[in-house]
Length: 222
Image (cartoon, rainbow, N blue to C red):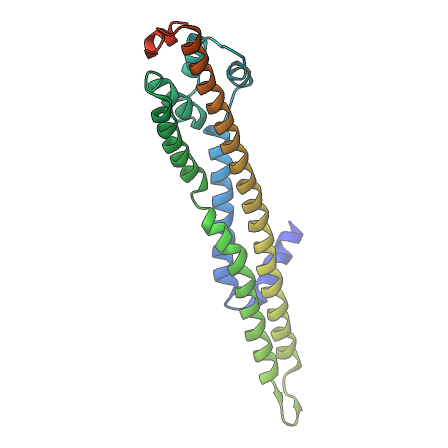
């Protein structure tokens, strides 16, 4: 508690730029928490479902049973259901619908990422602005006859250092969050694309084994 109190006291010397920096810090924290919740709730792929789709010639009824357990708004479930809903369509149509759904999912996962990216750039610049204003305040107290107000000069230098440090800290925090979620988004989309290809491969496999199995209901019965 003492460290937190000292940090709050130190921030009071940071000047006016501390307030917009605090807004950026809260905004970055809210976005990161929102992303953690999103990946926890909507981006969950059970191991049994993953292993089923990776199985050669899996049973489509079993896949439907696995999907029924997942929430309707689960991103993987949304993507796989698009494939199931268009299983009786030509492959080019199915791939197009799956690609459209993947794009919507990508937009959902990427929501707010531009804000984190902006904070990474903007926070150090705001800190630098605080540094400039703090040093200007310190230099104004140095008159032609020497040092006018030693305590005021010290306060100006403190304002400059605190604003810079706080801006850099916020930028580092936002940068770690941005890089982590960007990488996680790429991994999810790549995995989704690979599993979608496995499903289409199994559709073609079923059609080759039974030429009459061109209708989706026939494939689902397997």
